[in-house]
Image 1 (cartoon, rainbow, N blue to C red):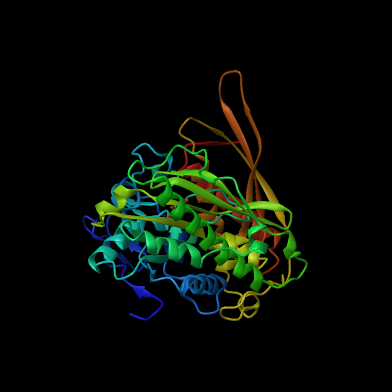
Image 2 (cartoon, rainbow, N blue to C red):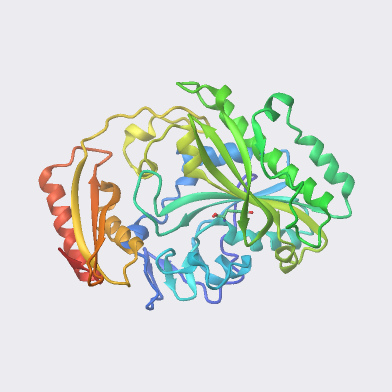
Length: 431
Ligand code: DAH
């Protein structure tokens, strides 16, 4: 396909029986199915492929940062994957919390909406193997889905970019040459704090030497700092002192990389996590049919980075259809978002008794389903347990539209509908 994007989402080789979505209705349903209407309604918007949308521009700009590396750039469209693809292929334990129904959207017991772009690692490594390693790596961009809380930085659909880069272990000279290509100049080096230099780290993969692990890790870290810093340099100065920007690497832990690292950026006075990464576990490469290679992988959340670079204050804005948002942006440029208006906030509290079956994410999900994007955040403001062991929660629902002033009666109606839905679908008792 095109030079930048190739659409090969049909290649879910691990899917037992592909589930097809017809007009937002899933064909197969069982007791695991938990995908609400508001999610189905948003699938297919493909914000990351809409020319001019900040998420599309960020994808394109990030891809350009890797253009001198030999990689495939891939967009994945259908988010429906098997649980084998999403979890097992990456060594995610059967008991891991991310597999629970309160964290993940399930089509049925064996099929879910991908929770991260890492779900496509194995498939893309297989493609590299099939192409006889004609490329050294890939960048995958896709929408990902997670049941989560409601606030300005969480949304149940968001976007990630997954990258990976490999070397033949016999090609030490090639590794060293590549490392030379991503050397940081001394000014940039001063902005980087590396708390994960591997010097006293003894948790490496047995198969790889310390030197290989060091080269892959330094290449990973420098490539990412160079890429992100180039985007920072493109960002308008409005109120931002770029000399204050810093990058920090710390150790992290993922089942599919070892060692694993996290990158944080110091931005406008706060440290923010922006990506997870590490040296790819060798068993993932061998599963894909790639022998005797070493390399790195990373996964970055596009909304988080776009909110930083474009100064977008609320994650719901990415989904608005308001022209006042979209007209502000030029394809493949980073500009500062100018808030067009902040409409008044209106809050309502809701209290209920729960039992041990209650999961906060189920409640958040219901709020999103009933109130759509009219809720800015949901805060737990009170919680107590009686002597008899009954627990009561009180949540504050903060209503604010991004497009208009909400009328009192509209909010009242939403709250009534929310109470009704809550009473009928969750195992709680309203107070
Ligand atoms: N999939 C991880 C997440 O969503 C991010 C990630 C971490 C991706 C490490 C990677 C990696 O490729 O090596 O949190």
